Image (tube, one colour):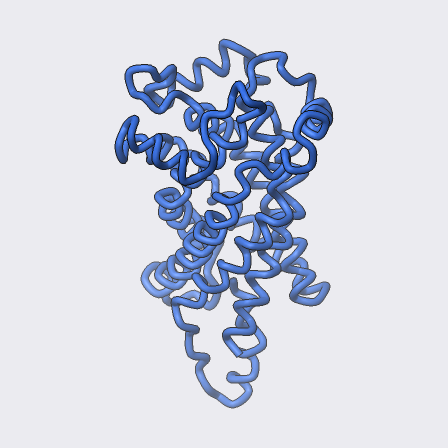
Length: 304
């Protein structure tokens, strides 16, 4: 978030004053705006992605077949199944993700690179990794609730009436372990935040020298998210497969992370790890471009 404070720092330096660091909590507040924007733009893409990732082999011919059949059988509402968990969830997740990222960046700068004027890329990577692991504890249950609702195609596959029903049934089946099924796979997936936040810093610096800050944030947010998904997508397929497995421990097809990896490869080969990649990469740019532009704008407004 180095450019967020640039204008204020310039004014202070002209008066020979040291810029005071912004409050640590503002990143968490700004993350709320990011979560709302991301969910509003990205949820229909996410529904198609999850259905392609978790459906039986041959169930859909491809992304457009999934879109067409969802529209034909369920109407526009079908694309927004499972919308409530991420509406609340993305607000919580982006608040924790971006708020903790803001805190980790300051900690890394103060304790590892105190003599550096700007945080180097390795520092951004460390902060991104910390943010990814931290938000996993919030993301794992929310993403599981969302995924289980999204793969309910019709009355035959309808097991849950909503997110509260999902949480209740998972808890009855396996206790807190059921709620957090997929935590390890979520953490593995989010280690790829290293690529997201290092590329975001690179893009942000490049674009901020050539265009206004909101526009720079928009392009940097969209492009860096696309970089993230290129690296992270195989781990996301594994995560979704685990999260839609039976909640009952004795009935699980994938009791271990590696079991899901082997299953995906056995069923579809290496291509299995790219199922649903099209909708995901199409979603990543507009959803995250809008989300990070909203976040940076909120940061600037709160730091005035």
